[in-house]
Length: 605
Image (tube, rainbow, N blue to C red; front, side):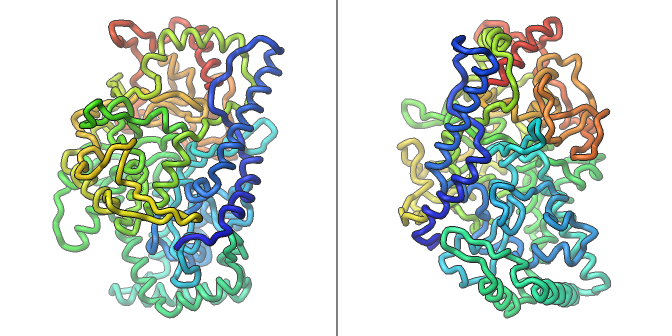
């Protein structure tokens, strides 16, 4: 099954190279000791935390690579050969010669430059028992959304493993696939003719690409004892050509469903905002909507006449991707009688409290169903539980940060503490918190237990260890406990106050990314209605990625208007709150100096 016995050695070698370049975090915040000059002290703290991340990932190299690169599907997705031919079929739709997927915000990871496609896509040959036994299918990996970047002062990029790819736009990818397929099937009058025209165009492009370069598709990539060389590529082409028409037909239908599902979701929940939603937003998604809409579109295509009111989310749920490091600090706990989960949870409103199901929910967004590879969810659970948050890579005024630490403890720490399972309504748009209806929750529980029942056992590479990833949570059996896989929606109509490790790298802020910097979060009267989102440059003063519309857009970013649709509103977390009888200051507009001290402290989290 999976990878050969040399995997650990090979992956360790790759990962050590990766973390040397990518290291950026540690396990705790600085102590603010006064034994060295402030600048030197912070540099020492940065170095300590960089080394801590190196050490952590080097202990979990296999889990890291499955998180970063392995596809969600076992035998389904986009045929890898077709995926790599997209820029040959419609060059006007796709990006640069080096990376055609940059138009969708996916990037070539400089830490593994021989990888044959942008980070965020993997292919089934990486994990299949017999490398040559089947056609390779490509699908997204966790790294598509959860490996981010920040540009340093010298122009280099630091990678944020477990962070947010603020540029990834799933909608753009799907729309451009749709446009490509429409181009190569233009004029076809029937589904059969579409398949015939698409197959002919794809085989023509395949012959030309492979004639020019025998390593066009896999770039002679080697990984963990597997060589994706010219011989492997030739075998993949043979397998593809043996059943090309059927493979192409399946891809046409799947791509059609993906686009139809987008239109179904937009039509129900984004009236008046259709153009924007069908262009997509980098770093954002309506994840619940995407996954439920795929099932809805499939039911429609099968003639089942599903009801959009019960099958699709009741409210718009577009949100920023979340950072996924330090999951242990969000971990729920069992009540004393083991009847319910308390004191924690994952996503924005904590409605999926058990990590394995939370990871599965992310995978199921692609609509792969039973084909979903649950080993990825299991590896991710192991990797992310204690993955350190990234260390702030720029200078810090530690004297000012010390003042901010006291203000944070007095006004913020009571809510932003580990294992706080309470949800809050602080005046932000509650659409995302209400996106799961009772019927959607039931369907999700059914899916979780169907795909990963307590009795299901999988073999984990490279050791061959057999585990039952959904049998227990924190030592308590999940047999006949589907109810705890997703919480009662009525109890989660608000948002968690998450721990703030690496908060500097999670900009922009609020669940919908509507506030560009930490300063603007604390001083709401200065929040801009419009700003530039998804830049990699950094605002070191106000703490957030560069956001000012006046700045040139030559590098990256897009215009984000918080007034354009209610779900994007930047209101909320802007009035003082009461917690356990104590008033907590949230609006620092009358104390900008205090706000700046807290901002300085949050750089160190």
